Length: 169
Image (cartoon, rainbow, N blue to C red; front, side):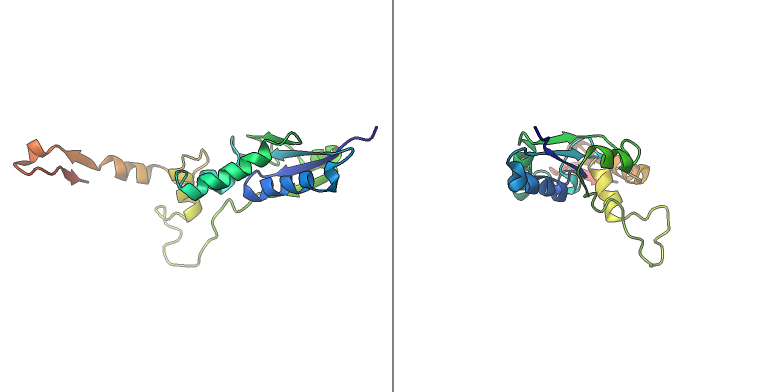
């Protein structure tokens, strides 16, 4: 009995998940079938949909629902928290899979040739999104946190007769 066609996809963002859906919907899904394994560096899938967009936005929820339907298919498996090449090597992928797709996305900012870009307080959009999403590898550290922690609201009773709370930073 022939074995299913095995496909490995490195990166479980929107492009990787859509790439996983293609062989499942294709002629490969017949006999003997297809098996797709997704390897994701982060603990959870969806890439920038989860780690870079506003998670409470209605359109984001719709996209996540559609992508989750692909992940729920029996031919698709997700392995999270797997770093490439640290956790799995290209030789291993070629040894165990018939096809390998890299769908790792843009995980770093491009350097711009503008004055001040090299300053310690200069961060790109990817670093900022990593920080506000609580990404464990965020380069952006204490500066924003310190600024935010200095901001506090004072009760109106301590500010005189104004019924509105005062905010100071």
